[in-house]
Length: 253
Length: 327
Image 1 (cartoon, rainbow over the protein chains, first blue to last red):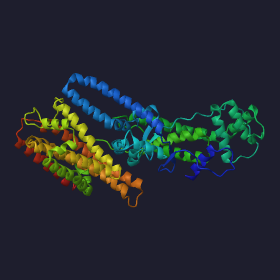
Image 2 (image 1 turned 120 degrees about the vertical axis):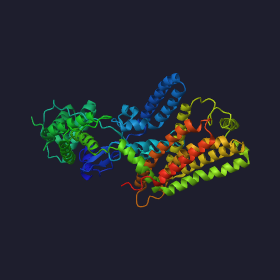
Image 3 (image 1 turned 90 degrees about the horizontal axis):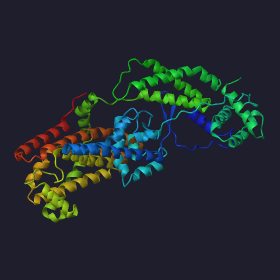
């Protein structure tokens, strides 16, 4: 745990900050595997889950309508099946999809969400059935009132059904882009750098493509001491700081 | 070691693990479980290597793209290696023949409380409404009361159904939907310290008591009781059991013992789910009987009562005796 937290810490802070290590403001849930590594699960908040729910709701209404049209042709038996179908959709639509390979309903999938156990493992049939049957309690007193309160109050954004079933709705991890620094020539650092300083410089380089030029220059100026440019600022300083990052990554020519 | 050379050194292993994972996930879809060609030992070894590499990468603060790649890799391998399969006919059989009746007996105190909470209001309200039939109007509107009276009148084409519903199949669907929803409410109410379960049990008990008292007073007892007596063996039992499962959850929250509230809740839910599986089974049987057997007007009452007695006896024997000796 400590090594991991140290790693997280380094990645987020600037160059060896004079401040005491602060608590990181995020809601990552750590699940330890038998191999002793910690999996990072990122619980999905109320917003994403609300959109996913609405999408699923539209899918269900459309299905009910479609099947209803066919059922009307068949008469009594058709209507009976239609009511059973509505019932099954009401209670088991999420269970069916959560136990399938996707691990989530179409709505959740569209927003990149997935239902997993607290341990990060795929959801078990019992847990999936439990979390969806306990939906009744979440719905109370009206319009998912308790679910919303529970999700807003909890760091891991669980509704009551999730708490009881031991499940978690998480964002599926997305691939991070490789560092694109090929155009920058590597420069050896001006002074010895502690591991956390190295990590900070590399983290800056990996964020470079997402920043505007001016902002990148500002941030690079904070780290300018690594390339011996302390106190200066500008595109050249930025290029040299990125060059140090290139060197730290291990490219030497 | 620099991040770059670390990646150079090990990326072939990571790529191999990625291919293996894609191969296995591609194979095991909804039905297929053929993992014969996948080298399991190799996969496990690669997974453990990737775990080591992740630990190294994190402690050396390697750049995010390496750590993230290893995180995704280990997470999906972990999901694959440690997943639990609980499907299959054998599992279902074990559940029906051993686990469900055993679990009911293990929770017999909850079952007793749930049964009392359902039946006492039924009796009390039933007698009250029988004595003063106008009290039914405090439960339902006068139109509903008239509708009930018409549903159970001896000269209807079939018993227990409104005029708008024309066929047995339609009523089958309706009963499944209605009864399972009631049972699920009794269960889910347990999350509110068991109070919700108690409320739904008592409410449904009071409602059926009021209905029974009213119809008896109107002189429709012959049709009404011959209608309800068979399927109630399954339906009442199921609702009581669902309530008992809810009470188990509520009790786990109120008295967690040496566990935290949350651990206690998760454990209770896992136990209670076994009962809920059985409840769903019982309710489907109940709905089928209610729609196709109970409503038949041409069956003599004696036959209905005999079958009902057999049903009650077999349900009670099943719950109290089945699966005692299985290992």
